[in-house]
Amino acid sequence: MALVVCPDCQTQVSDAAVACVKCGRPVFAAPSVFPASSEQPTRGGEVGGRASSVLSSILQFLGYGWAVLGGWLLGSTFLDTVRKVHESGGEATNAEGVGILIAVVFYGLVFIFPGLVVGALGTIVSRRRRT
Ligand SMILES: [Zn+2]
Image 1 (spheres, rainbow, N blue to C red):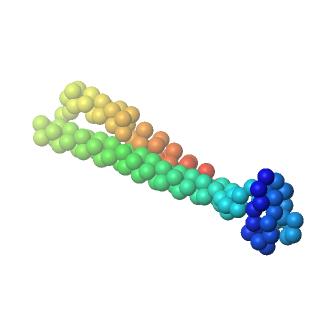
Image 2 (cartoon, rainbow, N blue to C red):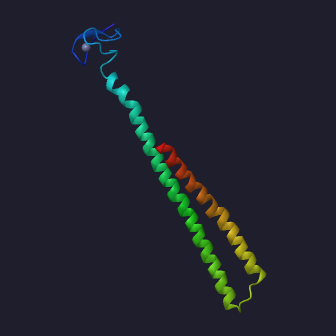
Image 3 (cartoon, protein in one colour):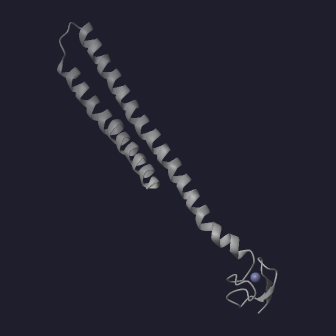
């Protein structure tokens, strides 16, 4: 058992005491316990909020960026094929039709769909943080 000084009234109080005998300030295990225990939850919450904010921004940026990239690649592939068909006399061959179909499926599955899912995930994370 040791004596500690009350931070409020500077009275020496036993560290086993529940509260200061003079002013009633609670618990004196260590003077530094007061600010640390009262600030830690707030600080942790702020860091968590900031982390999820950064996470949602990254998810939305990467997700929608990935989807837009896929849309752009699909568009350019489509236009490229249309130009080729036009140059070869206006009749699309089966190979060109299949090529566009594969491009739509490929860019849709690899870029646009997962991109939108990841972007939506980022939006959900940021909405959860606000509520
Ligand atoms: Zn006191």
